[in-house]
Length: 260
Image (cartoon, rainbow, N blue to C red; front, side, top):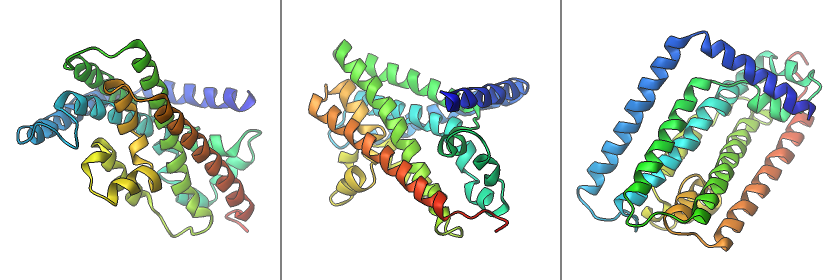
């Protein structure tokens, strides 16, 4: 609870700073609208040449895209502001300040700051999902919506865990920055994993859990995913978060500080 109170205070301070620069909010709003429209336009261009993409019809693909935008917005707002320069913080000693705080270094280092304006991308994603659902022949059941919400939250946890694992590489190899590789791999999530041929689809499902980001949650909403699928996704998320915590703990034991 103490860690959560510290995080809440840090997030509140970041929100107040962001509200003091309303022009930035307006700019982020424009970016969110332009990004959403351009993504939908690209998807429309694809479906102008085919009726299905990896077994997904246009409306279902829109739901998937919106789900991807929701999680991407959370990544830009809550995770990237903390981890984008993590290796530099290890190098120049700023990470030492995190270790002096009476709270979890894992949560403070990965979620201590935020860029609230980026949440507009998530809000745009919600609208995109709503548009895709409205275009479906039949509305989803209440249970399907509940499972989608649960799996979207799970996808956000997967995003945090995988991004943190990539950043934690710095504890062992400070010069090895994999941020650009992660960002490039992330883009595979905007399309259904069924689109990719084997073995790439298997890699994106099991080795790199890209499928958990949008394909699995969207499937629950438009295809009524089975309880087994949902349970498997949640179990994989829990295991990934546990792996992240263990990796971070081992990395801290190797870290000696910038001045050592």
